[in-house]
Image (cartoon, rainbow, N blue to C red):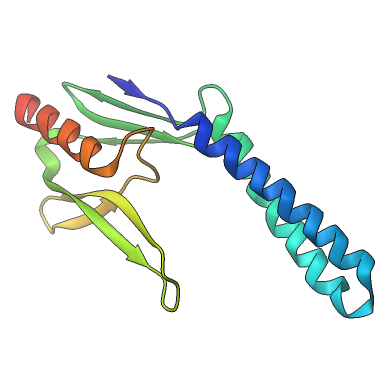
Length: 142
């Protein structure tokens, strides 16, 4: 089974970034006090657009599940984890202090020292769905 990043999510990220860049340009043009802030906004969201474009680039990111384990490719960098090396799967919730939102990451813990690894995204699935899929593969092949 091969899963790919959600195209809708990453296109929305690009569109939101374009909006923030427009805001940055407006801030730069509005006067002396906002020039530095506007430049910082433009640079940061230009990098976000670059990252999103690389994520959407064909063949740059995927998650492959098979009898030999998990193969994960993130922005052209490959990782491989064997089913027999994985202790368990779960959802790790990251919350930034002072912010109301949380981010859920699908994580797994590796033998022998129970070291945690997290997937960078859920590949178009809800975290709970992806954990179920991973568990079923591990139960079948691990």
